[in-house]
Length: 435
Ligand code: SF4
Image 1 (tube, rainbow, N blue to C red):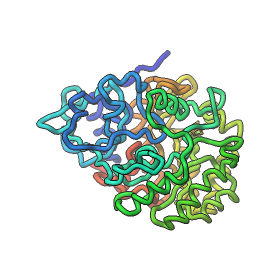
Image 2: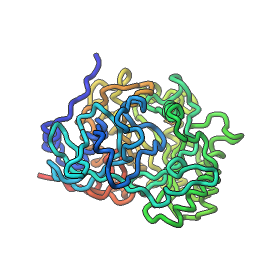
Image 3: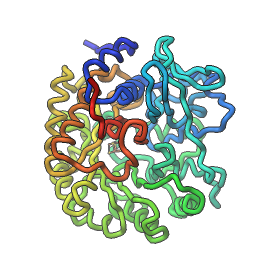
Image 4: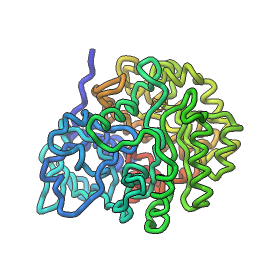
């Protein structure tokens, strides 16, 4: 039986507010907006003030294909929205934009200001992110900065997807929730500049402007798809290491360097550490053994879950446990047709994974699963809001149980301050609860 997407209503949000008192209301609303996406009216995309639009920095993170966006969302939707005030009197909360023309969260203009409504109820005014001053330049090769080194998280993170494809290809190997290859194709088909493999010179040129003109960006991430054989005659480690080495040689310690890639053996991790990378994200995606095999068939076949987990644990000896931050895709463990049938089973499994890593000082983070249309899992209902409230509560409880430090490289934690926009894990840190 196919699940039906749980409708968002004010009474659903109020029920969650009453039930989950250890997480702030800002986190609850954030997760629901991420879960449902945002429906922009044409007027709300015509702000007088220039703002930074979605750069499609790695995946689409949209609920519909670009071709189905008829109101200009594909080129005009802001990268993120910052909501405040409204029915719940929210503190300023930063949320990644996931376009969904069918979302109940509708953005319209009220007295010249974009404002988000849920079924006619005003949930708060919105800000759109500023355009960094250095976005006005073009590289010698004619590339625009938003294509080569876009910023997200309100300008805090420089996101370097240096390889915009993945060599896990097709349903037998691609991770079932991932649209990296499909997004690349749809961007190219739409006639956008969208470079498959980024040139080192372009990246260094854009970074030189950021170095001179920017004081907001504090970290950079090097990432891209997996490389199984070689790319440009380099192995996966050599390929990604080259970018890290070049950046750190040219701008030593200017920003905190992170790498998001496969789980490598300790010797290879050491190479990244030696060139100056501080944070390692060997994403484990989903904890349950059976689901890992089904949802990450390529990783399962080429590396295997046991090896993957062992390598994550080993990498803590290189980077230090607090600097190993593996991601999981929150909610994918409920995806049809493989997933758990109940929220409680999903949370039970995921909490086991959180406890496993956090007991060793490693702090997993999560992104909220967006059921993108071109993925193996395809468009589907996705988890109910209750799942995300339980997940945030479980994450916070486990984090506090082991008295862990705030994950480095995410900016300030807490309500009104967190800039990590694709889940609310940073928003819940330090929240003392409500009566
Ligand atoms: S390894 Fe999986 S999640 Fe990563 S880019 Fe490839 S298909 Fe996507």
